[in-house]
Length: 107
Image (cartoon, rainbow, N blue to C red; front, side, top):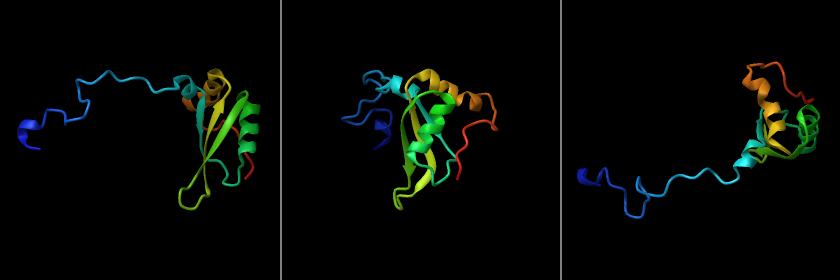
């Protein structure tokens, strides 16, 4: 592109004149999901769900993150709670700067 076209959107792009940005779909779902880290590599979905449910309220699902190449767990997960208030309770210690609290899994 030459200097005259720098400020213009490319053909087919929405550029600054496009429609206004929308919030991601499922905003309520995002408020119920929590990222969990430092899990033992041996932790199972059921163990994570049980521990997080016991500590903060009913957790509905757990997605254990795995390495794309090896398929082995990476020690992180996403946990979806039944309601946003349980998810907020789960992250509150982190927000408050308390690094000593949390849920401990054997591993």
